[in-house]
Length: 613
Image (cartoon, rainbow, N blue to C red; front, side, top):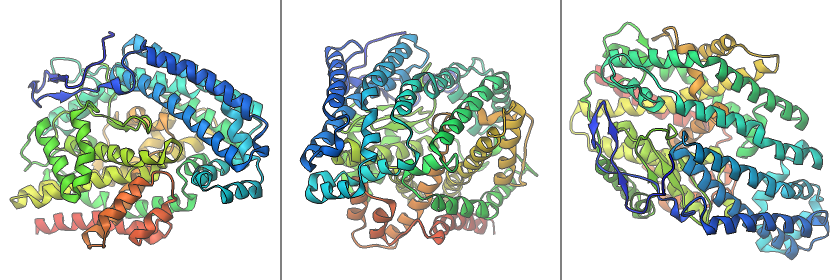
């Protein structure tokens, strides 16, 4: 189903047979015209032609000559590379966002695939740049940056590039890998996405089949029988497709092992750490601190929740259930908008001002629609346009927190855009900072407004569960990936092998408050991060711990906190995490740093336990 792009101001009212029509008010759709007006727009065709020529011209002008350039010529070279990056990113963003609006539309899928093929082909001549740049002598590069301040500004980009020097392959091999990517990991990613978007679930008690997002949403339903039915429906469909999902994971893990071996990467995780510009020992300290805290966090909280629910043991479908004392309610879009914007404005009016265009100018796509990709994200597009936020809004209070989270990403991306294309991109470990901070601001606003102890308890419990999902669950995911890649290095994994790895980390992280019904062992299958971005998940825990420490500094009245915070977001990827956190008196390389954030979660659980007394 192909249709014209929606114009600014056009709204779509979501219809869900389970909760009635137009329940949440008018939900915004994306207006992608700020990128391109249509797949056949003259501007897109012009940019595609320019990109092909610019890449060829760049290679003709600079290949084999980087070592002979003056500082001024190197600056022109880097700026030309950056301009190419902007145009390729703009075209790719348009194709990708349009596809995610309806992944079942074959025209959109074909358009995105063709765009990816063209961009890959056009940019193949650029592969020489990082390889040749990394062969420059340190003294040569240092001399250039010392003599030209505009070039020196790109030093963080150069440092990240040159961190790959020990892992660089021959020019010919690098070009081959670049060309082959469209039929390697990209193809498997697309197979996974299209399979997931097409899955439909028959849930007992529901009249119609539901897609993945709507079925997962039932896991937070107040009715325990509905949660159980949804869990069984998920398990049945995952099991039906488990061989395909096992094949996707086996292939991608093996492909990664081969490339890592050729690149002499010391571990499967190492390339992610390099990309995140974070030391392996910092991630290991985070992981160890969280695992050591399982008993005082997840194990303790879920025992408390079982007591509240009158159960001897929880089942996995009880994990995100609302509390028995919680009054179920749906939050309409207008209320969600006001809640988040007012929380942002209370922190700093500038933050709300940056966020407003997301709501008014078609920068958010909020409704659940057939074929739409599940989940939520904020996509920065390119620094010359603006970010777009995708939600699947179903009116739950947690959906308001998701809005606050993704809007935080959007604000961060707008502020960092001033750095330019190459310096704006923030490593994943720091990219979660503004999103989690936005959630915290929204939560604190709601907590301060709580009128009764019961309301405060509900808010605290919800926040604890969100933090456990962000910290404990994501580190358990990280451990699962570590085990998966280590096991795959020894040979092909059966679905049962992968199921067993999954259950080993779930039992460890959730504790003995849980019983695990048959079927849950396949729930690794739907987590997209394992497919799209191996070892991405620890960034969520990194961001949560970092934000908890940041928020403590804010609550303690650190002078000029807002200015320091805005400066940190504006920095984008131009500074290392040590430099970004120094103004706040924080250091993520200190193992004790992570205990600060984990103590905040434990403190909330302390308060909940005290309420029982």
